Amino acid sequence: MINFEEELKKFNPSLEVEEVGDAIYNQDITDVADLFIRIIKEDKDN
Image 1 (cartoon, rainbow, N blue to C red):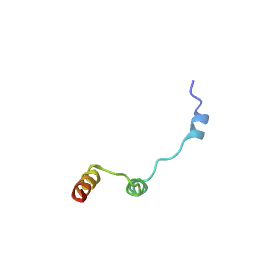
Image 2 (image 1 turned 120 degrees about the vertical axis):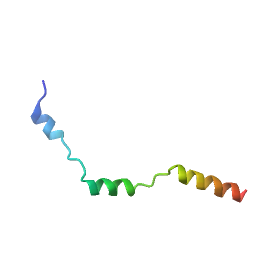
Image 3 (image 1 turned 90 degrees about the vertical axis):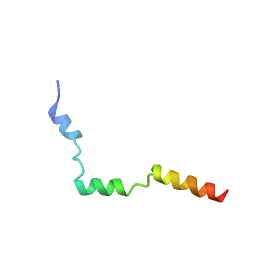
């Protein structure tokens, strides 16, 4: 059986919309466009 008191202790509230946007945009993630630009630059250098 589920112990609701224990489950409530584990609960972490979700981020607000603005905080989610900040968390996403502040990550340095390489996307496909970045990969294409890197490949083109490397090709021009060689």
